[in-house]
Length: 358
Image 1 (cartoon, rainbow, N blue to C red):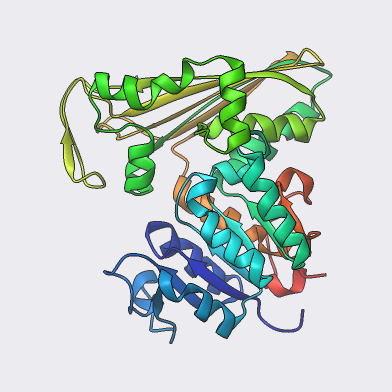
Image 2: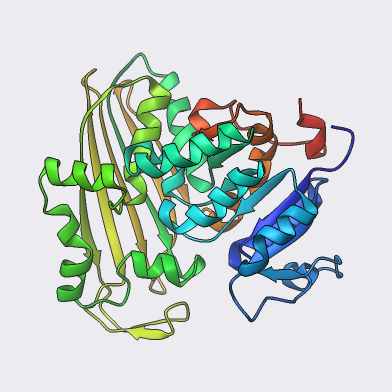
């Protein structure tokens, strides 16, 4: 491509501070920005990312179709919420307009196994209008390609066991509430943990009807199985509340989480496969106490056993850098709603992004 990639930013909150700056620094440009928050609507995006004015102001979500039609970006970055149903309007709008889109929505990373109905709906519209929709972010490398790369150096593989923790304060109120942060133990059991106490038949009914709320690792395990060529025979999930011995103030929730109440949750997803390989992954999302920090640790068990640990990853920055480095892959990919395990390996971009467009 002999011009800059034109990018739309859908969601002008915490994540966009990095994603928009990275877009400019990788030789592309933001042509429009959209948000629901009245505190940012009307602001120049330069004010949000801490640079000079860019001549692009944040539009309201009600104006999304109009501004996307007027600017017709090559791709839209959607950094809003975590469930596919929550980003349905944004992704369907892009698919209807024939605009490629990439989202940090965790479920979109591999939504085939949690909401196939909506996934297929978006996929069909994207194919019809010759564009590509994909989910990416931190998990693309640190829960995905990094793990498959370790497996590729193994002679034999029996089990993959992973754990990753992150501070929900960094990602906004929707994510914090989805993790049960601030709930009493009784409220957590009713609103979060009760989802685990169902039969496979009940769970499959919810999945096929688009009503299931997966933990992040539900989709990650599906991605890893696809990437490794494994056939999934069963998958279960268990969510357990996390607590802290003293009160913790949460600026995101605008409250004090009392000692003994849920600061968030640990979700463990166990996947069995026809090949006998087990994938057991845990994500811990919570309001951190002063002594807690992000950690990512995975072990590939086989011949040989291999463990990799990443302490204190800059999760927000890594998420946004991954998204921006993925932009050419999404633009180059075949039309449809695709998982990144079906795309080229993610690469660091040395040259301006447009030089990677085929």
